[in-house]
Image (cartoon, rainbow, N blue to C red; front, side, top):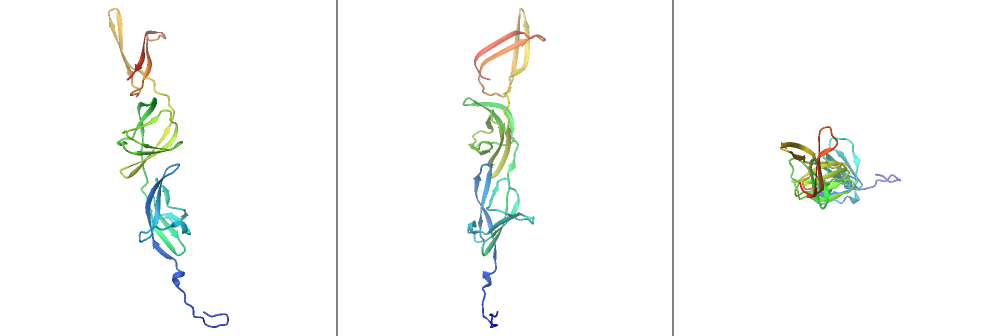
Length: 250
């Protein structure tokens, strides 16, 4: 190298100051984040020595789906728990660049069904829901919807108030696996009891009837008054009316 007068200059450069060092990084699970609309996974970046890398000074963080050519810019290592793809992350600092690969397991989507049974608790009515082949006792259930709640479940099945309305998402972890199910609650009228069968018995100068009420799924609903009307075919006037008052339990 020469100066402006043409004289040779002796200059040494440290090439390490000009070259960007590349190093393999590792994304390590840190914690779960309970958000407003679901559960998220938070990861942190470790270097090849197992030390945590502070990303506050990172110039750029980007990722792509493994096998893809497209990178997108991101701010952190936080993803929804439903994520089930493999990613390649590149984290760029002033003098070093980390590349890390990570894969996610996602969640198992379940179907939940209303059993048809109704329970009472503290003067409120609840529909019973069940997931086939699942005992839910002991789980922590995360609810997201119009309101967000966390429940500690102590029964095999689940119970929701009959007047609950709207779409809700639910998550729980069992045996280190995450599960999710959806319920769109509709405010349905309570099923009314109806006659299942009746047997008329003719006796001398008398007539008796034996009857059974079709179950509505109510296990322990208290009724203050029950009235039975029996009509002749084609008649609108009952020929038998029987009323029972008091607390009746199925």
